[in-house]
Length: 494
Image (cartoon, rainbow, N blue to C red; front, side, top):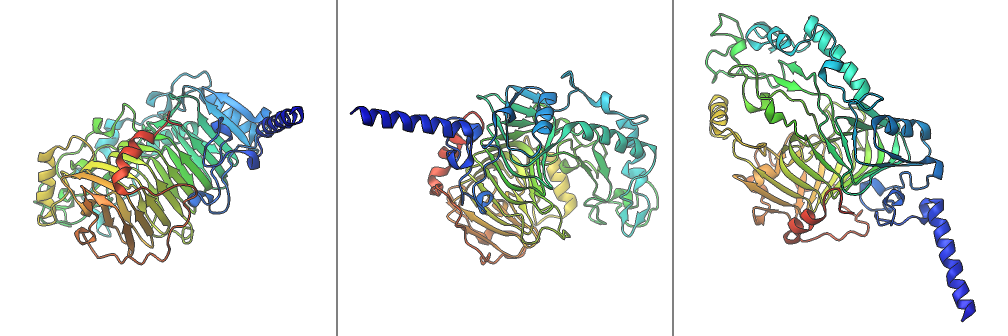
């Protein structure tokens, strides 16, 4: 009996020592660990783990474990450990738009003279800037002292709030209230093996969005007075629709990074929703999409990034959730951008959940909730749709599309649930220049997904691949998805 007790005691001591060493081969898999900083994503659990387990900083030595609660502490920890295995535990709220004394920096602190939003708006107002077209569009490269000052101000903000995350990093929130706000974490282009869990990300606010007069511009003669040649204030290209405000920062950018796992996080605009910043130009430049956009994406995966899994997370109250592939003309994305999205909750998000180019993207057991009221009616011309949208005054984001099927994308959608008020399968998936798309077992408003409702060119179901990277996860039937996702997704639930 004593020998057995001794053996058990020695085994227990050995296990404790192994945990303390932090070696990835000793860490729990699938994120199940008493210390979530030591947890790893097991091999074959989604695209992130296609080449083996994502271990992040689980092998960190004691000197590379940090608990941080300010921007300075966070940045110093990343710099000290560099690419060595590191665990960074976030306590409370970290404001990335803060100085080294943790005083918040605002627009006034970043502004370079003579920038002033009202002066900027007047300088590039469509009524004056759009009078002369270049190759059928207003000049998109703005010039002049206001644009120069805006660019300089934007750089000053960017230098402060954009934080590079090196390889072999785990960033986890402590408890149920860890937040990273008012900044942008960037993974890549040379970073890999990164884990981010149990954190609420909010409000990557761009104080200096730029106006692009040529974005979505078109000579649309359904609009009164719209024509290519300028005549007077009532007739000319300045009366044609188009132009958008564009902002700079995502909450997380996987910008060429590789082997990244984002889990049990949440993403939103905080208390500075873009709804608070409506269009500033008069008709026809006052459509809802022409609001002054201060927030870009939530999580973008671009520039040759590869092997990413985003799971058990909440995306809420935002227009454009995220891109997988940033451009149709990319020379680095073919064969990459392989991403898994599972068990995520999208609530009151307008579009790009995600919008995909090039990649093989597995989307399963996600729950999408939104309202499609305010979408264009294909039976009406653009002018009438514009007027109708202004009358509708939608309270939240208009759900324009959940899954965007872009160039050379191969999306495998499986057992997702779409609850789309005033909509149907036409908003669940939209052809945005792609050719293939397949859905298996998803439900839209209580009925099976119906590809016949899709708008635009038809999509063939032969995506050329079939998912195998499920790890220990069981694919739930669609009927079980809403309850499971709502009870489990987001920070504070590990």
